Length: 201
Image (cartoon, rainbow, N blue to C red; front, side, top):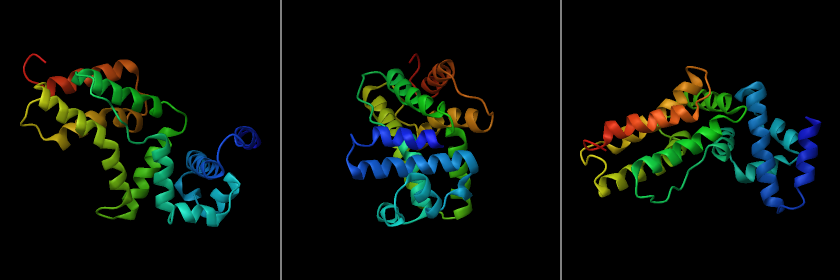
């Protein structure tokens, strides 16, 4: 733990203070979740681990759930994929970026704990759902562009198709407890394109 603090101190002076507080706080949340689980995330524990004040944390994140979601989003956040003119290339871009995040140490537990925390909250719609909507936005745009280019069937349900894209990597990581691979990404892209594409895509 001392090494992590030293690392923060070494890289800190080059960043604005507000950014440093945000980064160090979210890193502390991720460390606590991956080491001990979401129950270890208290404002006191995060403040002590990050070396910031509780008021500084509360100014940015009014609740524990908001803080955990922000930490997850710092590692697995929304993407912006340009129009590459090809549905395969764009889906590969999304899934390759997700793959890089999922392969980082601690991500599997962070995701599992985040999902469990959202389930325990029992809200039909809340911050967690808003977070997943942001995550899925790029994939929905890709599918919509695919429809406009004539690569994707116009009758597909965009939301269902976006879930079809996102789910396999998460399932392999959490349910099968195996790190997804680049080959798996290629398999998923191929299967999704076959499922949603026009004949011969």
